[in-house]
Length: 257
Image 1 (spheres, rainbow, N blue to C red):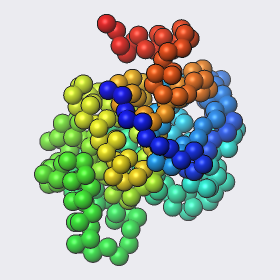
Image 2 (image 1 turned 180 degrees about the horizontal axis):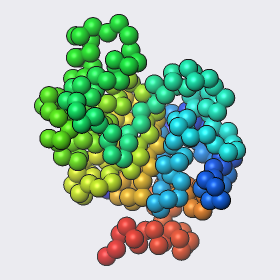
Image 3 (image 1 turned 60 degrees about the vertical axis):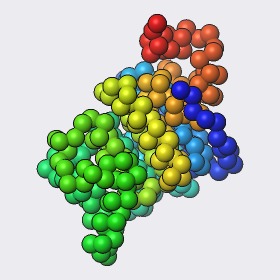
Image 4 (image 1 turned 135 degrees about the vertical axis):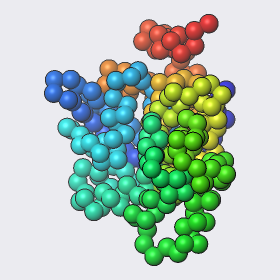
C-alpha cells in the first residue's frame, strides 16, 4: 500500500548532514553521506543489514561520533555541543529501538513514567497520569497500562516503546527497524501507527528499514544506502523503476512471486 503524498516544506530542515564518514577499524561504513530531513516529513532510509543505517541514527542522536562530516539537528551541530546541551537536544528526539527497550521489571505505566521522572521536574501525580494515559491512548493500548512487558505481544511491545518516546513530545522520531520480527498483519499495524504519529504529533521522522512494505507504506521520501552512500532518492516508484542490479536484487528479495 502506497502512502498518500503529502506536501513537505523543503525550506524547513530539521536535520542537515554533509560529508558524513564513519569507519570501524579498517571497515568503512559511511563514506560521505549527505542527507536532509524536512519538517513533518517521514524519510525512509533503505539498505541491507550491515550497511550503516543504524550507525547513521546513532550519530544523529549523539550516541556515536563521526570521523568526518557535519551533522546539524534542530539548529545545533551535534559534535560541537556540550554534554548538557546534548542531553537537552535528546529530549527533542524520540528513539524507537528495534527491540522496544522496555524494562521487564516495570509495568507499562512505570515504563512510561520513567522518562518523565528522569527529565521533567515538578509534575503532579495527576499530570503524570494524564500524559501516560494520553500516549497509551494514541497507540491504542490504554487497557495495557498495568500489564508487564512479558504479558504483551511483540507488536504491543513495539507500540509501548513508541508511546514511551512520545511522552516527552519529541520533534523528531528515529525508528530503527520498526517492523523487524513481526508478522505481516502486525507490521501493517505498526506502519499505520507511524503515519498516525506523524499526523497527530507533527513529528519529523527517519525510519530505518530493509522492509520494502514498511518503506512504501510510511515514506514521504525514500533514500537508498548503497556502499556507504545515498545513491538514490525519491518516491518508492522512482527508486525501484531504475535498472541498477543492486536495487533490483533488493526488490526481488522483498517481493518474490
